Image (tube, rainbow over all chains, first blue to last red; front, top):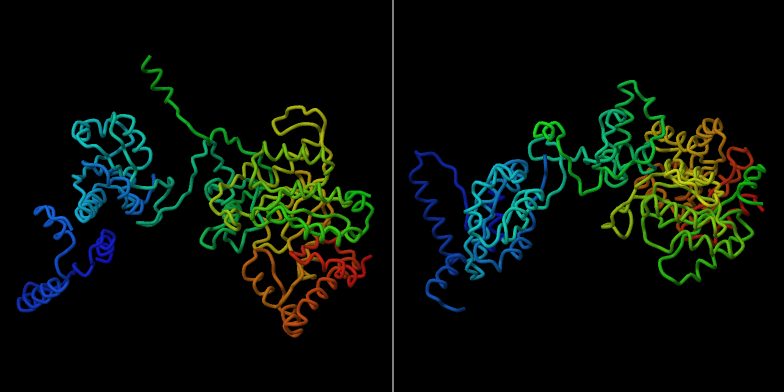
Length: 63
Length: 223
Length: 293
């Protein structure tokens, strides 16, 4: 995980955008909780630089 | 085996950024064991380059591929039609591979993505150490199987220098003094007499490139 | 009398180091030469010492010679291959420099050009053999030369190397390869050095004990920790500490003088090699306190 976070940082992507959670198949509620939390976190961080770049490219928008 | 480490990402990016269609081409033998240039590393590198290209707004098509060896043409020849559709090959093979592919590919550049370092042993997984320098004139029978050319910082042939330091080298405490190791090993083998003879200056002509050789037997069979 | 003749005469010989500067301003070096002239027997000129780039040893040897002192040319194998070394040996010879100290040389790692490619085409033992051959008119490849050299060759030894045995094997090889005089790494423990000399006396070589003046207890501790083959005994460190900051250097000079006096009085070795390292001015004072000249 540390390695991959490092790789992401190298190409200008916030390593916070990647996380790994361990849990068993019986932990449904916790799973939902994590998904919500992580979704909120990513929303807070805003669109990723890759998404933005691709979006601009598609719409042919100059900065 | 040949060891190498991936170049800094910025250096690689600066090499590829002005091309349009790039193949990150891995080699699945030595450099794969170093976690530097196998198919997995080629794939990750291609992916990182795509992410960088997207952010820079650079329209580069970046793919990856790998073959078992880059040091023998028969391994990469079969896929050359595909390889030749690119306008840059970013090779993650060792320097031997980069040279040889360059020689065979025609008018497409082949750039190195790794720094080739030495040929060495793998004492523990993920750890590499230089034990032989390929100097072309082996004297391991005289030095207890420990090579002073590769393992002494000064490649000394007649014993330790004044920088020998409690078993370490003056260059770094992490480097063992090869001559202390040789002394201990010869003592263990009861062959310390081997250290008393003055070893003449080395014939370095055999250690200097460009070097090549042919197997005589195969030559004769061909005839 | 030449260096060789002085040593052969049995006189207690004093050599001191001249460190060529980095740059073309040699006023200070001239001053050192003036201070040492007439006091020491021979000036020992270092060769890019500690792998730090400076004026070449050969050029400074010539300056020393022109200023009325006999030089010893230090020659390391770090920066020149066998062709360069032999060419410089011939050059030294025709300039009138006839003493050479053959060294392997500190690794470039120690110096100020860490990215340099080290040479080490040959090393100290082999360089001694080269000198031996040139003295009988042959170069290293066996070619006959027009005119032979006449070098008095020396080498170094570290009497307190750890481990010592492999170092002594190399010392014996240097003797076999033609070293006639030796200078040692700095020594501070007279009893240990006497033991070493009991061994070294078995060989037909002259031994100059290395003397480095201790400037402070801090310097002594630093050397114990960082310089291979140097051990300053605890009692000397205590002596420097007791002297206090003001008097430490003076005490260091006293210690050096005391050691030199003992080496001379007890005929332990054939002379000393004083490495002043920037304190060349103090060498006459050390000698005076040691009862020399």
